[in-house]
Length: 90
Image (cartoon, rainbow, N blue to C red; front, side):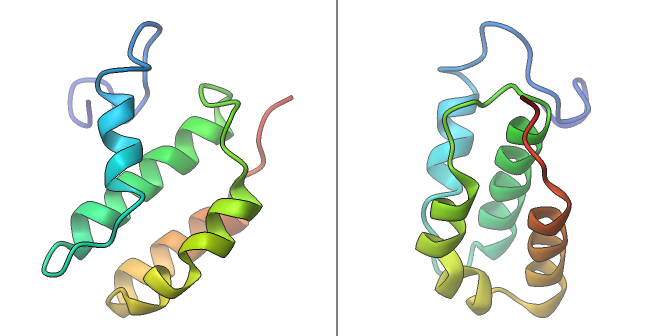
């Protein structure tokens, strides 16, 4: 997904791998902040490219704001920067 597809999801990948990515972006597990941040970034990219038309970014941000604050500074900054730059395609 990351190396062979440059993070871009293809048609037919809604259930796998995207469902797994979404699950990873919904829970900050202790000792796994990178996985959470990476999954979040992939979800934001999917929304920005129009692949994911169901995720409400405002709601997602509100729900996970405390998780983002708990990330190490470098990961937190990347996630916040991605949110700021993400505009869903109509």
